[in-house]
Amino acid sequence: MTSFAVINPATEEVVRSVALTSAEETDTAIARARAAFPAWRAVSPGDRARLLRRFADAVEGDIENLAQLEVTNSGHTIGNARWEAGNVRDVLNYYSASPERLIGKQIPVPGGVNLTFAEPLGVVSVIVPWNFPMPIAGWGFAPALAAGNTVVLKPAELTPLTAIRLGELAREAGIPEDVFQVLPGKGSVVGQRFVDNPAVRKVVFTGSTEVGKQIMAGCAAQVKRVTLELGGKNANIVFADADLEKAAARAPYGVFDNAGQDCCARSLILVQASAYDKFMELLEPAVKGVVVGDPGLEATEMGPLISAQHKQKVSSYISSDSPVAFRGSAPEGDGFWFPPTVVTPSGLQDPLASDEIFGPVVAVVRFEDEADAVKMANHTEYGLSGSIWTRDVGRALRVSRGVEAGNLSVNSHSSVRYWTPFGGFKQSGLGRELGPDAVDAFTETKNVFISTEE
Ligand code: NAD
Image (tube, rainbow, N blue to C red; front, side, top):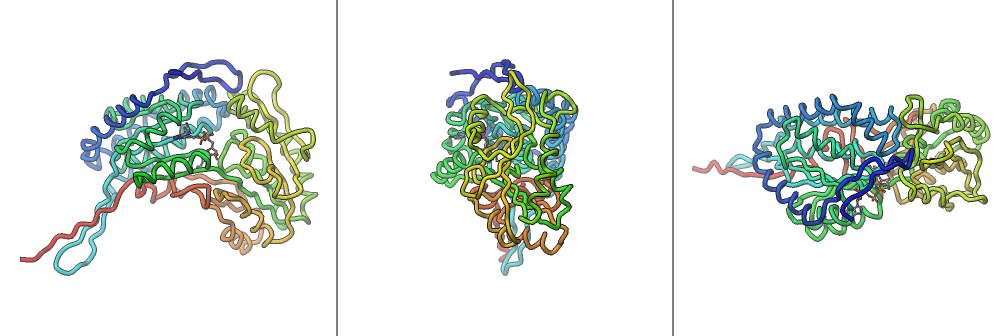
């Protein structure tokens, strides 16, 4: 197979055929990225910053086009897709402030001067999943480029269109040829070369925990640097003292956004037993009110799943015996539609409560007290995100400290701001992206001692 037919998941129509990069072509691209590295790292910090800001401006000028591409390729709602393109612009602008600030230290030592330098790594590779093609690409390439690395990026097979466009925009903005290359292709071919080719000094991987483990094992052979952003089964903990109306009204958007295809989806709602009945009563109209349909329409809140195969996987969790409490709506006919679905498994041993289903399915389970809630939230091997709803500030902080996850929100479902760190505990990942420190992960610290002996 040398090309891949990109399908619109809302209509099942073929959008475009995209050529798949071969292993040989990947190695050639890596060699070109390596050759481009010395000149790119030598670009003065101010000029590198200016180029990144120009790239951000080019993205800004193309937001509507990028957003429409994502609606067509991924079935994202137009509102979300505009936010995602804007996130790439913002992340580029944020890290455009880094080149002039990659400062080292002068450390007092006897007999000389000791300096540290933040050196770029060389060629950095970025492997992107299909669920957020634009933001996840930007979280990798923007800080990597800012630190003086050259970048090869592989979008997911299913969703290459916006990444290809971002590559064109980089060129139009003046980022030199070969400094940022987009290589559509298969994980087992292009992604595997990123892991195996020794000229690649780091792999930034976002995707499933299963593939992430293989990448980490592959990178170990060369002690290759790796950042992993993997799966999640995230708890939304609702205490009886919370604003239950607000908690119930917001809960659907904490899990059904992007049709539940979100590593941060709060797909396990833990509700304090004394508030359970009231919460479920309030949740039902909120779930039934989620507007599911044509992702190109402004009012739409949830689109289709990404593919027929993924729909099959999500559907396999729901049968006539499943403990379905209630469901929202979804269009009939063409498109990979699946309605928002609320299930009430009897405990956490049920796969509905413990698997990352990655679709619009949420499990609601009761808990008794605070200790119980923390224990239940931590029962999973994952540790990515979570939410805590309570009016008690002390409890909010205790539970936030107790839940083993990288990104928590209190009385909200927010996980991602480009200027705050993002990443997972346990099997949800390794390392952090975004925020003030992400550039450090794209540098090595070099220590130099200069003798002042006569
Ligand atoms: P996936 O692991 O199947 O694929 C992710 C990427 O890896 C794709 O580009 C794929 O082509 C590539 N790949 C596959 N096999 C490879 C191999 N052997 N070597 C190198 N690359 C390979 O994941 P997916 O189905 O595209 O994405 C969904 C998963 O991503 C979910 O588990 C989700 O939780 C996770 N995710 C995590 C985050 C986070 O930040 N923690 C964000 C988004 C998605």
